[in-house]
Amino acid sequence: MRDAGRKDQQGASGALRVPRLLAVANQKGGVGKTTTAINLATALCAVGKRVLLVDLDPQGNASTGLGVRRADIHASAYDMIFNGVPAEEVAVPSRVPRLSLVTSSVHLSGAEIELVTAERRELRLRETLRRELPYDYVIVDCPPSLNMLTLNALVAVDAVVVPLQCEFYALEGLSHLVKTIDRVRQVYNPGLEIQGVVLTMYDQRNNLSEMVAADVRKYFGEKVYKTMIPRNVRLSEAPSHGMPAIVYDMRCAGSKAYISLAGEMLKRERAIVSAGGKGTVAA
Image (cartoon, rainbow, N blue to C red):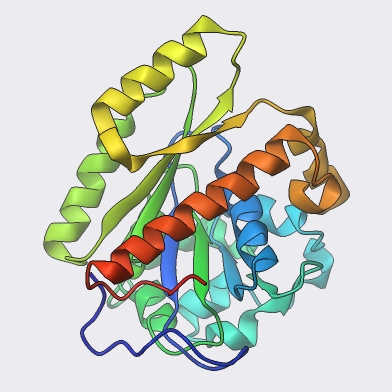
């Protein structure tokens, strides 16, 4: 559920509204987390949504994946969290129309230590993002670990999108993320929910992929998206060209899957609104 005081999400392009806040998180690396964040954001922009992507990973893969060079970064997510710089002042436009980016920074590498002694350390990102902004969605790309930066994201957002690789150890360790989400819900963010689980790196030629997919659906039920992201060379190539796969090659299987995923996610958003929630209204 959203905060009671949130205003209607509809309005003219660029109008201020409290956006729908989503985190893309999994403490396991190499599961397609950043690829999912970038391409899901791009697909939402393709249907007319205004999106802010926040690169909270010190590795900065979302930033480089959108063609932003470290030398060109003058303000970043670090300034937003530690110096209170408003998100809209830190954000820079990307090559994708309607998609803005809050870049990562090498300074985020020391954020874990700095946040230990910081006041309101769990609420820094929440205080920056939970207000009126010129976006329909804010998507936070989290680090591949359950650290203070990830905790800040979970406290700030409305829901979590969990990419899950179709491999033998997929469910191993995921219970820690689920427990963390439950703990954050109890202590800091009562409305936090899992928006959906995305099965990534699916290989239909591999019986193991189908077995893992079946196990995940048995465990998470309808939380698992029907759309599965296949193993796809073009998805891997796109970041080296500084662009989302959907822009790099819209016709490849991976791009088509992320476009389908965005459509499925928007259906869930409409269901939230119909059920009396405050999610972004999807046209």
